[in-house]
Length: 439
Ligand SMILES: [Zn+2]
Image (cartoon, rainbow, N blue to C red; front, side, top):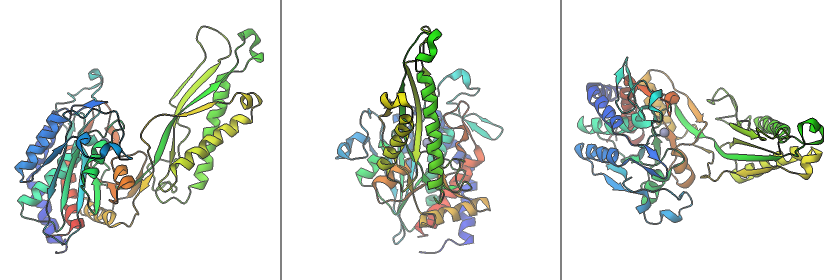
């Protein structure tokens, strides 16, 4: 096993740059094959067969399997039921190393969120049009850039006669979007494992080594109706809801103090968002009746409360609920008519992190620095990715790393820079050699 020296780095860079048109062609083909997820089903089949064919072309033997076909998966604690996996295969292929190196999983999801209202798009969501250096389409940023880059990185290394010492496992999974995650879980339960995993969601080539966990809540607040002429005799559920919204603010303040020392989220310089812990995120509030003209007898609001890696999820949610109920109990009427906090039924999202000095983080930083000519950040993400599945349920430390920006994901006219697709391929090719060693 040799070190990755400057001459080899230059050889990899030249090999990738020489295949620029082919990389972009493959990427645009992937974008042109819709692979929308529509829970409980999804349309990933045709795009996954295209991926499998590409893997065969480069000399790998793809393993295609639908998540629900993996023995034992339905009793796994990470399995979230209710999905239909008909014609939704995962595609996995192993590139065997020469021996003696660390093994690496490169994981990306092929499914995309629906294109939505076509009138909001100025480009065909499945046209992969290239305009002014940008390629437009649903799934360009989230995350066919990662699928294209990881497959082309392996293809180009192989065809340039450069071998890795450790095995590389390519995973193109279904059902990540809209709360899925069973696709990656199925790869884990099927037995695919490695010394580390890279989830190739766009991160601008920063290394995202942590993510928050959280829970969606609905809070229902009661009131007491009187005719609006006798308003003072009633109790407005809306006013009480506003009081309890303040309880979300005070929870955030309390938690900001407690989490000040957190490596990824406590120090705002490292976090991607200025608030360490969110609770005051009410996105829906309804109260009262438009016609009746009396104090609202009910108000409901929905919001997200997050917690950090290393914190006990259940304990943190229980503490949060007690905090809200304690604020309610300060009000004489709400003391006798307490609000109801309901946890939305969803997969548990737990905070996860990989240490900032882990070998995979070091390798990715080196690969990114060689690609960009500058140091990159090690950051924490606001939301979950498939990295959570590895970190929560397996011994495989997983981080998020790829080029491109997440800023246009899930929006009309989603796009990536064409150059970022090439740059990501270069970064992942170097990352493979940095982590797995040169064979
Ligand atoms: Zn994604």
